[in-house]
Length: 537
Image 1 (spheres, rainbow, N blue to C red):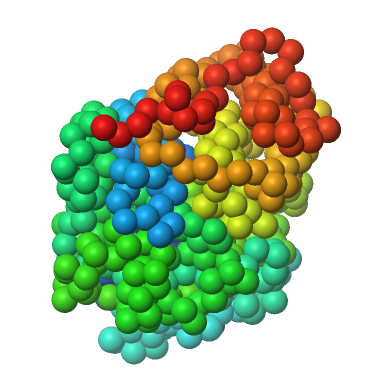
Image 2: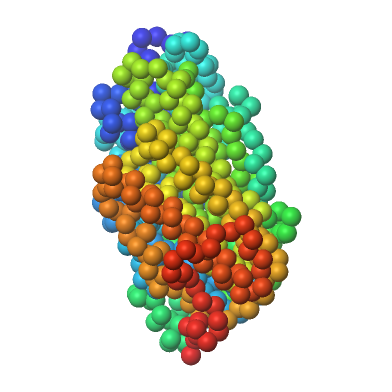
């Protein structure tokens, strides 16, 4: 299928976010590696109205910034994010008259709002600068998998005609097209059924201005720039995102449990506007003022799916949405690109060293799926409580603690493949995973019987010292003893946080049997008693 001039170390199917990042990471770790990236779309891509997935959280931000060396671009061309912010604003005419969850100051560990067109154009240029053979306008026509050490074959077409390549590693980053996943029938229903629709407006939505007449509310954040957050407007069974882009556009998306809000109720711009008018009137007014600046509108049925296999000892692998996808909430897509790409690089390193691949494929895939299943538990069956201003803040505090305290530590400290560490801490990690599953089920039960008072005011995560310290500590550099000490401390803290949440729920009259009790001073959590919630003037 190929001649001597078309045989390469790796061919990456897809030159979007996952594929270009993988190419850059491979080039950084193996400077002599011969890498070809085949991307269907021609570059340059349009700004703003290109792809969804614009918000990053800590793992992805660290990956782009430190692992791939893109710090200067992120600082100069993208927006520093003001954290995740939630308004329990179903039916509310003003955002200052409902409970708000977020931070009053920017978090210590950075994350970013990414204009995907701008970013992927830069990634393509950077790939070529670093000597990667990036071929845009290249449509993959077919591929043949090699077995038992044989090369893989790829055929593609571009403006010059038909071409054939052979490669040692075939790496699928084709997004939801899922070329290998569909060929090998690897897609799995993960039981989490949500749909999404999104659009971009060529207008900055400065939600701080929506309540400018309330000076106390406006000035509660420093700087007073809530618009830089990934803002979530929440209700029963859904949330709406507002993400600013550095090009000046704003991304708006509706994500909903299909059993509560069918896709048909918001799957085009006219229906989405009517849906927003019913559920989020404050945002609806802002959208109507600039509806004529609409840049695009897209929808997606069935956002979330699993995959039976992502790595193979036959030297193929899947990354990004070519493999699996969880949910847009908490923006985990970039994180799982970073994790999958890191495991792929580890497998390539093992192959280049002449060692056996199969044991490492089994280990890395088991760990990757474990991270996936733990994260999936944050979403599956949880959408009914998204509009609950009592339960959801406690859930977010728990979810942050679990994410920053465990998964982020493993990534930031470069321990994703540390088999010795995983074996040593297996009992504690398994206990934490089981506790997370119990907590997610508990949140659902609590929601079903809790009152839903929605007092105006900010539940300020900056006033939760242990939560801010976990975030700040992500940037620490730890040795072997340090990472073990940190993980043990964070795993113990999870039980204390669970106990504190149980105590809150018990005050609601909720049965907390089976949950931990605090063994020391109760960690400070949000106190929702009206007299102690910061209220607007």
